[in-house]
Length: 239
Image 1: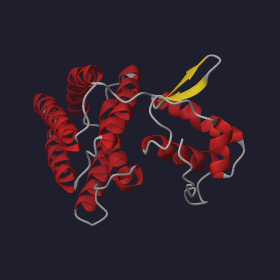
Image 2 (image 1 turned 90 degrees about the vertical axis):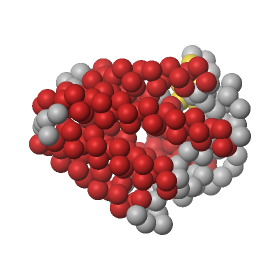
Image 3 (image 1 turned 180 degrees about the vertical axis):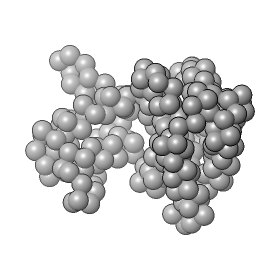
Image 4 (image 1 turned 45 degrees about the horizontal axis):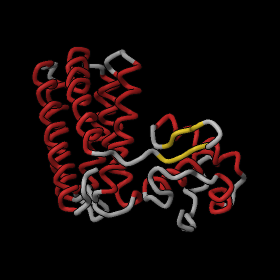
């Protein structure tokens, strides 16, 4: 693990949340390599905290699917997706997310629509500024990626199926690692994502279940093409 010293996020956050964000950054930027064991004491020294909040952060990251806990070995970072697992991930997304979009359109929950509007507005603002989702580190694209994730999670949450929501949340954690490794995030990709999200939201707001399902499926297919294109451009060979 490289010895990068990371400043903790703003003090207004709780210590636990601050450490969680800092450890997430270590994992996402591969200061702890994919598949490597996490040295809790070393991370605690880097962040100038006790081991306890680091353990709490790792427990949350295990729920996110970014680390794994093994008996007698402790925590290790989840390996980067290989080609088969990447394809499997998108197959599952194609099955689950269009269904969730259909249910969201059928229910037309006003609170969910408010969340979708808010996250999409935030993504539009980022795409239109120099602080948009371009860069080679987790910090560079974190805000856009989190808004993107919350958009999809809000739709999944309307399904009424907590297992579906949990499954999609874990899949997206793996996908974020893959995308960062292959330098996926660019301003062009951010703009395309916004346009596709607008189509999904328009159909949901109109109560067009079939249209929402189709728009989500189209978005996932295009996202897969962009992710694969990023891998090719990065020059990283599939495993």
